[in-house]
Image (cartoon, rainbow, N blue to C red):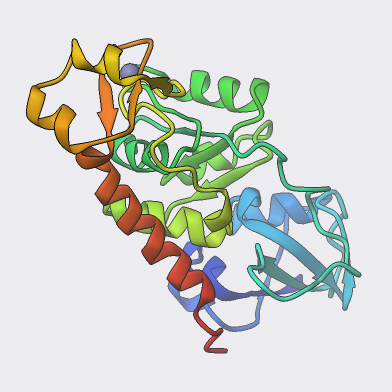
Length: 251
Ligand SMILES: [Zn+2]
């Protein structure tokens, strides 16, 4: 029998009677902390810090009788560097893969310039394999995907609507400063190339050409992007996200 307490949004994964309170649970014998946490419904990828009897431990710590186990999500702002964080460091290049249900989110992330793969016809196994081999952060609303043992960097998306999902990912992973709008094809995920005016002239209507200065081009689908089309929406989104970032912490 050990005592557990989960903090913040980790409570969303627990059965109702266990939320936001300390509860006791009898673990299977020889369970590690990671096994216990996932058996209670919380994917390990959502957890950033575990204290057992007040000391920070790793996932492989065995649960002992009468342990008091506190489990914390990924912290946004306050500094816990003196404690053991469960992942050595965040991935340096932020790249994503979404499961088949989050295609709308993938488009918004591309709109902000983030390399994001998504494929309707990928099986769950393929999604996990690509996430691991290409060191991509797995975005999903499926707990079982995140509980897969090879997944190290994953993110459970709480929101239902693509735009809100995008805001959730950017603000929880603090990516505001890394947004590069107008740099990636929404359809192909390919980086856009500069297109000079002369080359643009053969592809666009004269009015579009007249009103805009900068043009970019996707070498994969040959679509031309210019500041008028998606740029305003992107700029608004980035502006809203960075406003949230600057907002004082209510807590
Ligand atoms: Zn394209």
